[in-house]
Every structure is written in C-alpha cells, then in structure tokens.
Length: 117
Image 1 (spheres, rainbow, N blue to C red):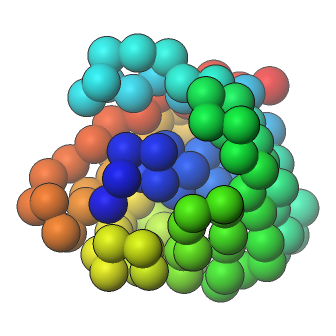
Image 2: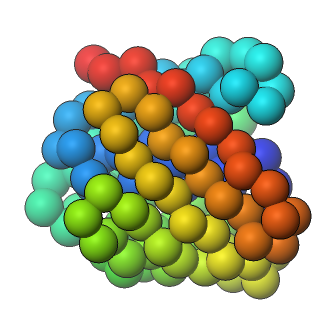
C-alpha cells in the first residue's frame, strides 16, 4: 500500500482506539513528521492529510480518502482491515503514543509516533 494510505490508517486507528485527537504523526520509516490530523466520535471519523491536501473519513467499517478506500475493524487496541487500492491487508497495534502497522502485502512493519492534540 502507498505510504500516505498507511499514515491515514495509522491516524484513524489511533483516533478510534484511544478516542483522542491526532494532531500529527512521525513516520519512523521515512524519518519525517507528517501533517495529518484525525478525530473519531463513536464510529465516525474525520481527518485531514495536510501533506497531500486530502480529507478522509467515514463510518466504520468503511473509510474513504481521495484515492483510497479502506475497510477497518477495531478489536480492543488493534485495527485490522483491507486497503482496496492496493488489495492489501493490514494490522495496526495501537498504544498511547505509537501505532505499529503491519502491511501484509509488503511483509513489513511500519511505526508511527502520534502527536496528541
């Protein structure tokens, strides 16, 4: 899946699991800060990727962005789902300040440190 989709998934998963507003992410793989925000209220999400000028959101289990469509289910502190754009599955483990996302298509883990609003 595309790096920007991984970031959207990470921000969304963190907002859903913790109930806190995401004000930014640090992508450890890319070694840079991402201007991305997300807020969840119940099963509804709204977000904005400032690096790509893209709004994203929706109601679980379906989230949409300009070029992405993601199916996501939350189970405790874990989000599982499917990115329709890349036809790839993902698993995201969420803690207070970190999201570890496993991209099954790439067979690799990606870590995002979360800035809370």
